[in-house]
View 1: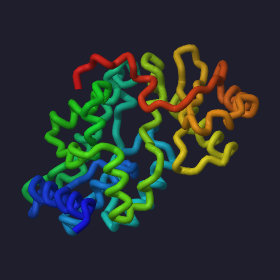
View 2 (view 1 turned 90 degrees about the vertical axis):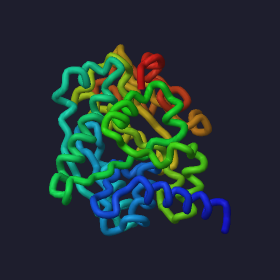
View 3 (view 1 turned 120 degrees about the vertical axis):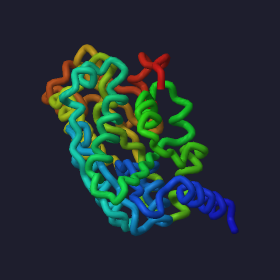
Length: 277
């Protein structure tokens, strides 16, 4: 048995141990790499008692929902949608460091509520948090996961190993760029409003089309406090990103100015480095 086969087998055993053979095993699903691998493994163990649940709100773009639908169909796991209400919460809108906690708390409540028909109410919730996530103090959503007793079967794997496992089990998004929610593009203190996240969604779609960027390329349009756009792209492609082409469409969306720099995950979250996760 290969190393990857052994590791995947151990992941399945962890899920079997933590899951429910008589209730329901729900995966907090985004269609991204991590939650896709968890959904695949949960489905492999509990096919008839598994469900992927995707939370929908203004921070989830159209392309994210479409990707989630494709990946769930590829796996074979049933996909359900829940609507969350974090955009009604003043603490979320303030975006001062705890928005992710508010959002995840809303998601886990909604997931359990939509499955209240499960016999005995035996619901196990899994997420895609990995070893790298757990070492990042800015991820305050992890606190919500602990409070809701969410299981994180990827907690011993880093991102590189997760990509290897995803490729091993045949997931088509094994090499796709990360796809966090649109709110994550807002600099700390920029209000998390529907208008702001919609502007980000449109801006990123325009740039992906303009520069013909595929799903493997990381690109972010960061909404900065001065209402400017900071466009981030993988460093290897930074020179290709012509600001003369970027500025007209982004200024037309309402940004005050446009600049660029190399992509760095979580680059607008520095203000939360000391937050309790």
